[in-house]
Length: 281
Ligand SMILES: NC(=O)c1ccc[n+]([C@@H]2O[C@H](COP(=O)([O-])OP(=O)(O)OC[C@H]3O[C@@H](n4cnc5c(N)ncnc54)[C@H](OP(=O)(O)O)[C@@H]3O)[C@@H](O)[C@H]2O)c1
View (cartoon, rainbow, N blue to C red):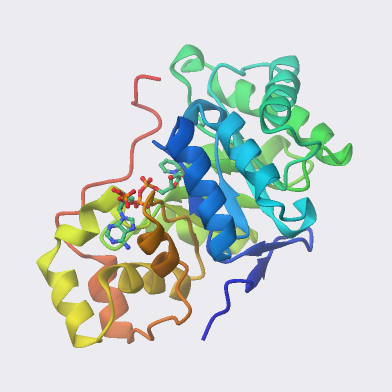
C-alpha cells in the first residue's frame, strides 16, 4: 500500500513525493485546470519547465488551490538558452516570477547538450551548475539536479561540481530501461525521476503489457507505475483527464516478480530515449 504522501529522500535530506504530475504539452487553461484538479485530488508534486510555456498557469493554479506552498513540491527546469552563469541566475528569476513563487523545491538543467554549445557542452554545464549551486546555497532552490544526462554528461559534471546533483530526470518506462545511467545514478546516490512513465502513451498500445495487466487484475497504468516505483524511480505521469489523474495517483503498488520486472525492462517496440547529443535544440 502506498499513500500519495509517501516520499523518498534526496541526498540533502529533503523529501520528495513518490509520484509527480507531468505537465508537458499542457498549456493555457488546460494546464491551469489540470494542475488545480490534481492538487484537489491529492497530488503534492508538480513538474514543469520554462520551455513548456505553462509556468504562469501552473503557478496560478497552485495559488488558487489554496494548498499551503510548503505542502507542495514544485520542480522547474532551466532551458537551453541559458548557457552562462548569469544566464542561469536570470532563468531561475524568470521562472520564479512566472510561477509567482519565491523558491522552487527542485531546479534541473533540462538538457546536457544544447545545439548552440555542442562544441563545449562540458564548460556550459559546469558554468550553469556553478550558478545552480549558488542558487541552492541562497535558498532560492531547495534541491538541484539534471535531466536527460547520460553517463558521460554526468561524469563530466561530477568533475567540477561542489554539490552533487540530487536528481536525474530521464525517460524511463517499460521497454525504455536505461540501465547504464540508472546504475550510475544509484551508485552516486542520485535519485531518478522517470519522465514519460507511459512512454508518452505508447505503453497502452502494447499487447504484452495489456495481457500482463489482465493477469495481475490491474490497469496498464498501474503496471507501468508499479514497475517504476519498484525500481525506486519517481514517476511523473501526465494526464489532462480527471479520472486518469485520480487513478494515476495509485494507492497500491502491484507487486511484480523478478521475471515480470525483467520482462517489462525489455518490453519491445517502445522506442528509445532521446539522444541529447543529437537532437536539434
Ligand atoms: N525532462 C524532460 O526532458 C521531459 C521530457 C518529457 C516529459 N517530461 C515530464 O514527464 C511528464 C510525463 O511524460 P509525457 O507527458 O511524455 O507522457 P506520459 O505520462 O508517459 O504519457 C502521457 C500520455 O498518456 C495518456 N494517459 C495518461 N494517463 C493515462 C491512463 N491512466 N490511461 C490511459 N492513458 C493515459 C495521456 O493522455 P491524456 O493527457 O489525454 O489523459 C498522454 O497521452 C511530462 O508531462 C513532463 O512533466 C520531462
